[in-house]
Image (cartoon, rainbow, N blue to C red; front, side, top):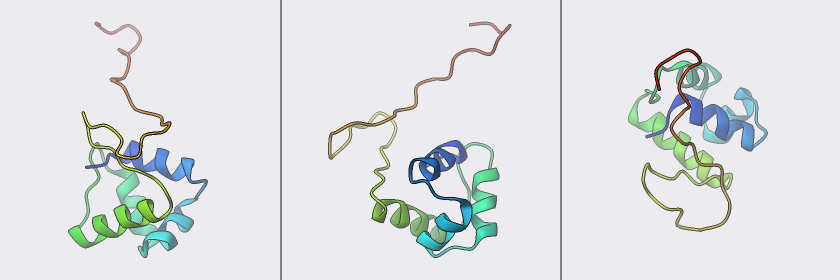
Length: 90
């Protein structure tokens, strides 16, 4: 699973705009826009999600599942739990 925020971050790491990511993955720009606008985990049909994952992988981006370690090792930018909102309990 990949969240909309992770997808935007992945695109930024690859220095791609939405059009470039769409071309890389064989998807339409509106499909990428819908995925990035999702709340939480991105939604799409299985074929589109598989194309997205394959495209990111072909560009050298490794998707690491929650609680998993990188298979390749190396450096990364993992996402921790977000800090509590200002003024919120925490």
